[in-house]
Image (cartoon, rainbow over all chains, first blue to last red; front, side, top):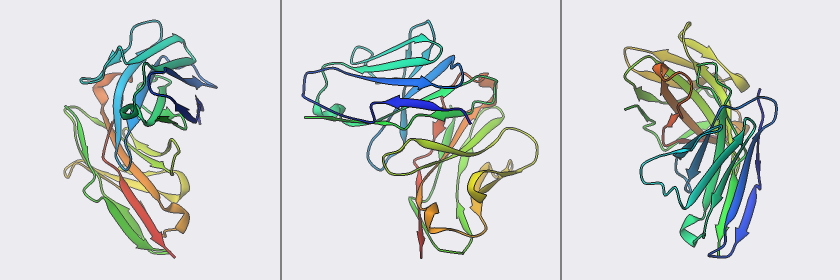
Length: 116
Length: 116
């Protein structure tokens, strides 16, 4: 199946700093990528939909100035958590759609963010 | 709006016994249904999907799921459980009218514990 690479897998940062997480589709072009947040022992919460070459669409309640998403190419989307605070600590997962209409998503391995 | 319900937080099964993880859904149009598995601190791995056709879908690692339109269910099954099947399982749905560009809606997840 298609491979999505997410980096870094773990990151620890100080409060007030910014952190960038990359999501790459390795063997296919992803016109659409999705960013999810997962709290411990909970389901995935869709944060935003990232479309190549256009602005991301954020879900209700997600601060777009806090979570900056860039999808500059068909194989790369980035999520930047700006001025991170301890409450931003979470597991962030990206996924990518290769299109085709069936909606199957391919997921990255996730990034564990810890803000001290 | 679409939604997914996984009524069980946890399912315990003895190794070698059959297992069932329940899922019901709600969508306006035709459902595209998915099962994913997540191991600790990892991304989601695709197990199987139902788009159209045969109601019984076979997937990875010996898992299968049966689409039941009248009961709006898509239960995950396996004839003989392995200890290595222990993980967190997510059912997901999207409306088939979406054209492939929509994120999935996930259930809250079910912890499957296979006891030796």
